[in-house]
Length: 446
Image (tube, rainbow, N blue to C red; front, top):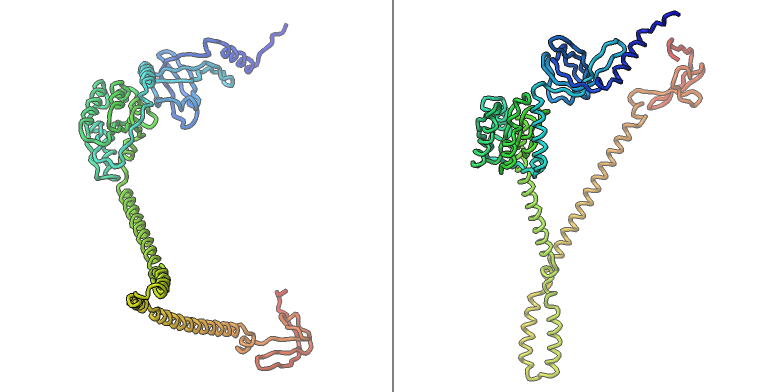
């Protein structure tokens, strides 16, 4: 019986099947040292894991790699979780990594997760955040005196809002004593007159940033009556201090920008509000003035005699009653009548008639002037139109020496339209009869 030979593809497929169904290879916890690592931005990562005696190829897909909290480096010892499978095309087996963390800090990550859960249940992360003052006078900065953090904050504050006072509290931001030193300086700043507090340091590993994950630091920040801005590590690093602080900033420069406004912009806003206030005041003044003018034009001031029209009618009735019933008091009533007559004489409307007549004369004079201006304007427009029409006249063009030719009452526009017979040449001052002796058409014309 002849032996049946397998193809390489069939063998690799069979072995891959064995790898895929093996429950022990479905989830493997592995420790080793990174080798042959070269960063491929925004792509899958291919490298090796090795120990003293062996090596295995590894692949980490882009989605899993972007979730890492650290940057892998050549020679770094790591803890990985993944599955082992065969790559059928090359016949090589490798580990597909789902999770990776530096070896030796796994306990720190576990402790951090437990502390975050504890403080979250107590409500430290969800408690109301204190608003930052818009125009701080004094800002406390809790950071190292020799790092780039304080230099960035000083530069930004001087550029944006130089009238505020920055006070540095030199603080240990790394090591076993850093957490206690941070809490001590927070308490010290609380006893002084500060509007805002900035707590920060530069980036680093989880061990470097661990003081800002300590419970005593988190509780000191949460209990502080002063609004606190946290700027710890890089933008991708999130510490417990960031979660309990009132505001989190990605960088020290961003923290300074959150703490202070731009002085030039604030001055501009003040000037804008001042201008709006002045405008509003002028508007109110104008309204009051218009109301005053309306009151001045009221009939009470324009026709004051209307105030005593009723009294005048009553006077007439009283006179009739005196004439009928009180003969004895005729003299007395006559004196009263004379008094009222004098008052009426003082209110003689002749002055108002004269004033109205003067106004009518003025208006009539203005009307005549406007009519005169209108007639002059229309005459100028007519003259301009006549001049423009004259410039467009074909006779004007012919007066400069131009002529036109007709033949059989048709205007000749091209030499091709001519016939060898009599034609008429038109001048500005007459016509000429001419005969066509020969017609010559230039070459190249259609």
